[in-house]
Length: 93
Image (cartoon, rainbow, N blue to C red; front, side):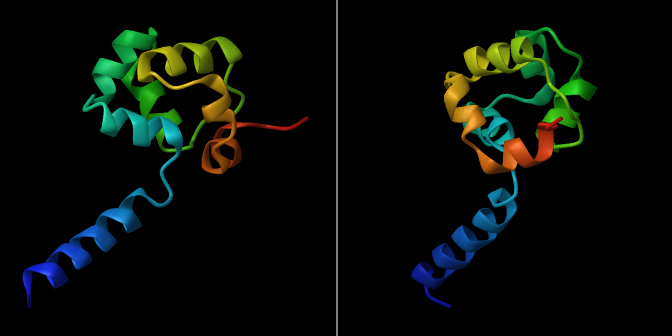
């Protein structure tokens, strides 16, 4: 196996792991924050951040999304334009 092949395989594995993450989880990792740190910045519990990052919570308040956007240095528009986030966290009534 050449070094280039190794890099390509490693990149594919990383992309597979990141593929179904929503923008909150991707940005948290990109900013090198653990869930506890993000929770503290946003004023939520670590289990709540885990639920958001894993797409296991519905009906997030806009105020929470705004605080997440500020903590992660992304716009609210970026969050709401992420299909994974919308599918996982937004309930349409």
